[in-house]
Length: 219
Length: 233
Image: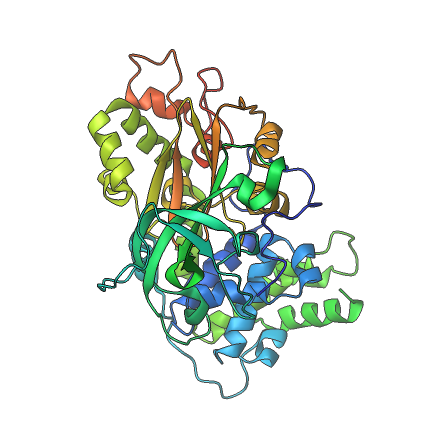
């Protein structure tokens, strides 16, 4: 979706302000919502792409007003309610509905540590023909899907070169909407900075964007 | 947020709780007496955690373990050790550049949000910079959770269109003949910059080298220098 989250190349956001000796979490609620996102993900009612999309669905004005972890609160509540792990009324009241059945947590401390150690690979061990080869000229498709996509607006319609093939991965555009993993090759595609931004960019600079087969066409 | 909403949330948080922690009860009782009431996220997240625990959907001990891991155990010191090893051992560096996952695993690191690592090497002619314009993708096992600036709108919007301007704000002015490569983490590949080893470090051991390597240098917004030795942050 052409949301405000897709902000590469936008102006007006101000200078980058780095904090000295920054803590990992600034408030304990940030730590709790970070961990709750992992723990609730273990129910496998959604996936990483759906989780990202839940935050993209925050209305633009709200998205820009919210802090990073406030977006995680909004996104998690949206996922919990949509997947019927809890009702909106329960979230608003903070208490389980009468007669609701108590579950057994999906993520125990042991499983949490295993998740940290092993992660959740998004690659898929399937042999699929790569549509493109390293060194090949390509064009990022000019497409504007209303759902989730990882093809940033600034690269759409632009010409680049396949730098390397990273292998086969789950395709976010379908996976985020529970329409299947549609595995395909992902490539780092090198775009000349001047192809993206014109003469204002330095002549030798470039931007590498990781793109799936479905985002590309031969050039 | 309206007063109505705030009162509602406060009531909600209080309702949530037979199992409520003392500080929330305290906050509730005194809400109307103090200016410094808990912020909305504090209440909302406490109520949410309480609900999910009561419904048996989350285990508080699992949450504690996750928080402890990312607050105390996984951070940029890991990445610094990887860099120091690469500087000290040319064969390791080759493995790191060709199969980052395996090479990083040799030092015992890997896992969540580092399942597909790529290491990119800085040189006198090439400077690499990592960003995630769409969200906040970052190589957790080697750098820990990202700092606020990395997740901020200014960095996400400008790193791709004005990398040299962003670097200047970090105090790094690159000569025109240096090629800047920006890596936008739009897929599940996670990028770690292998900074240039600074002059004057010949003969230093891995541990001493690792102490020089900063988080910012491994994201690509700084260089490693001998004078700025110290923190990884």
